[in-house]
Image (cartoon, rainbow, N blue to C red; front, side, top):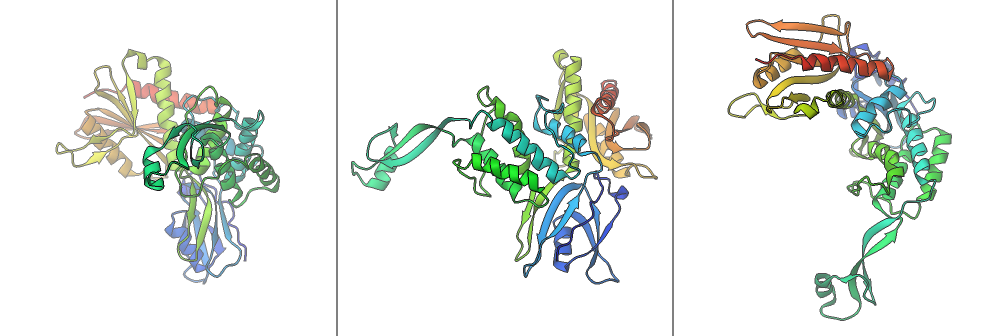
Length: 414
């Protein structure tokens, strides 16, 4: 049986996402719930019926139950337009902002995985149009002639004093370098994901053929290191998107005979990266950095004097004297009819108390109004709650970030 969930519309705003009811094998429903892919609850009255509700993750997964059969595919579609999601993604991938202005096309795809596959394939194609990049890598082999340098320790350990063959190491000029290996690994990974359109899959197969002489990275092995240089500049966009595919963005588990394979974005992390990096760039663009102000992301502090209770605000702005002058935290949540969660206010109150600040700032993905403020009794602390409208075009979104930055700049110290 093949079963596909209706796209669960969510940008991490669970309370606004309708639940989808599906007939699923119990093992599949339990796996989806245990992996945290969606909130999955069995129907108490209908055997095999499960209610699925999107959480903070978007993407697609295919779950194969024990005993074989066709996989069950669950697709979670973001509520924001795909093109907007890639705009947000640019802030966590490339601080140079070189591809945030439409260079990464996503065509007309409405689902995340097809759009990502299309974008990666287009970028890989552009990177390889001038041929595969070549570079030097260290090669080690056993040879009958000396080439490069002799690996003396290996020669003694393996050859027991024999003169030939010789263990040597040398620099080889080749296409089998880290950049090409990463591109091939990303293409291979995309080809294994569910929901890739036929035309995109065909083009990905073509890109894999172009990289056929490059060593494949075995799944589970660390990715090879690469550094952006002038020589590999045409690869930068493709490598940035390939990193999304390969580094921690996929879900793949094999508990027993159950297999889960797919690709998921955590919108909590994506939104947090966008807010904090955009705020930092806003302050740098104003010239505050040149006047001695610095911004730190995920800055570690302690609530108590014994340094036993650790906390990490998403964004802390420091003045020229090195003392904190503003703090902000990004929350990928929507405002409910009763307001934002109280726990967020308590958390920000702790940040303000520990950092000696009279104001703190919470930035949400959606709200009933652009800004509200709460003055804490007997503490003289004001906690601001800002709401960003992710449905608007990037210029409007960055204008909202500028307004948040303006309020941070005016934060009062204790």
